[in-house]
Structures are given as structure tokens and as C-alpha cells.
Image 1 (cartoon, helix red, strand yellow):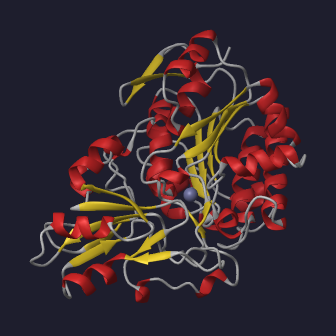
Image 2: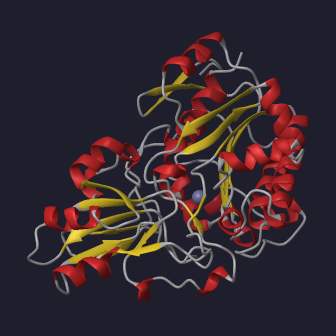
Length: 414
Ligand SMILES: [Zn+2]
């Protein structure tokens, strides 16, 4: 197959990379971090990307959570195509709540797997291991997480001795280094000429804890920027996008602004009337207490779903409710995983189920910052090279999505 042969994935065509191409998912990088970083001169390399290449604000997929959006980015398609719309769902057939821990529910191919099949050397590196399994679905290449870097094997991950390659031990789960390690590993692979296409997916731990201008966020963004500089030095085309934004979810008093929707509905209609599933739920929730701005609601008693939905819509802090069919249609989510209805918090409100399902002690004094709703859809979208005339024209006429990034990076530069 020649280098210009086009590869079809989920209805779109992709060219094999002719120069090393790196796509970074800057997890939780709300556009406000970029704006602040540029203004405060924290981001010299990202500033260069923006001035020499392309920068716009794109829309993330709904719900604006990490896994649905990472899957959308590598599939080049919304959740209804790849099937991942949260970390957690209620199986209607069994009535059981199921946590998605591997790739068994991934319903489509990925750009990474298809390009590897076409002969490109592909590497996908994630912060968390659970995401690694999904992103690596069908991929014949290098695929590992910084969480489990010490355990990578040739058979499972296409690489071994990752800690020796990067020059340090796999970082702690809750350290900013979990993300920096991902970038450093990508740099080492590029330096060694071991990959043509890299997907580097970070963690949003810092953004959950620190707002633009906070010392922790500023230092982290400087550290990421420095690594972007190294990738540019190595001659790579660099695309940067985020899976979702991040918003302060506290009230005027600084305390978390939470609607415990299951509690409120069951108080009004009787115990057992409603079950609320929070698709942000994950074994690692210390930094946000499993609270996001998007939930799925199931009518589990005698009260009809539309009556519960009407009541939910009247609760202050609930910004939007939609029945499952409408939500799946409007947000391109898989209908088979949808609730009877969804509830989306307003900008500064998260929606939980019951207080006993959400432990906020892990916030350790910082404000609750989270995502999941419509307010976290705007995300940065940048490329280190200018767009071709064709792609420039497209930007003017079509809604730009974060999952367009591989298309732009592989097909769209001048
Ligand atoms: Zn995220």
C-alpha cells in the first residue's frame, strides 16, 4: 500500500502520516487555561503552535466525560458510533449497574487500529489503565498507561521496560506526573524513531483541583508546554485537543453546589421511585466525589418517567432534562445505554444520586470543579501547522468537533 492510500474508518478517510504525527488529549483543558496561559506568558510553545498553525474552540461530545470523548477522538465519531457514553450504566435486561472496565463494549473500529493495520507504527499512551484498554481496542502497536508502566509487556502492550525508556518509575495515580510521564514516554518513542502516529492522553486530576491562575495549574500547564516544545523540535505535526472543559461547581459560599436528584425524587414520589446513575463514577473519584453535571434517570417504581422528568426540571440547578430518545438523538449517544431521561446541571451545578454515594472529603479544601454538562463542551483545538485551503473553508461552514482532530492532523495541513 502506498503512502497516500486512504484508510476508511467510521465513514471518514485518513491518510497515513508522512511525518511523525502526535495528537494530545489535554484532559480537562478548559479553553480558559489556554487563555490565561497565553496572557500570563506561561505557554511559549503552545503560543507558537497557535501563531504558526491553527487554533479554534471545538465542541466535545456529550456527555462531556473523559472516556466517551477519548473514544470519540480515536474513532473520529460520536458516542452512538463507538458505544461508550459513560463509565457506568444500568443494564435494563438485568436491572444491574455495570461499570465499563475494558473494551468489550467498544462497538466500532478506531483510527489508531486502522492505521496500524495499514502499516503505520502507532503508539497510544494513556494516564489511566482502564482507558488504555478501550483506546487500544484492536490496535496492533504500542499501547500502555503510565499507571501500569512498570508492568508493560511485549505481548500485552507491544513494549516493555517503559520505566527504563522514560528514565523514572511509574508515577502515583494522583500525581501530575501521571500525565507528564505520558508525554515523556511519547517523546522517547519519537526520539528513538519507534512511532509514526502517537495518541497521548493525559489525566484531568490537576484541572479538577486547580483553576486557571492557581499555582498547581500554572505549573502543570508550563510543564506540558515544555514537552510540546520538544515534540515540535523533533519535527512532529502536533494536534492538541481536550476531552472536555472544566467548571467551578460551587455556590457563592464556595461550597459544592449539588442536586441529589435521586433523594429529591424519592422524597417527592416515594422510596424506590427513581434510580439515578452518575456516568462519571469511577474507582478513582477522590478529586470530584463522582459528581458531574450529567446523569441518567430510571423510573423504578409506579410513577411514570415523564412525571419524574417534569419534577426534575423544576429543581433549581437542573438546567435541562430530555427523555432518553431525545437525548440520544440530539447528542448522538447510543440509545441502548440511555436512561428514561437525562438531567444536565446548569453551569455551576453538579447532579448526584444520594449523599451516601458521593464522598466529598477527598476535595481536601479545594473547590469542587467538574464537567459532564453543556458548559464543558467548548474545548481548545489546535494544530502546529496551518490548514490547507480546503480545511480552512470547512472550519468556516461546519461545526468543529474535538473528534475531528485526527482528520485535521492527518489530512488537513497545508
Ligand atoms: Zn477528562
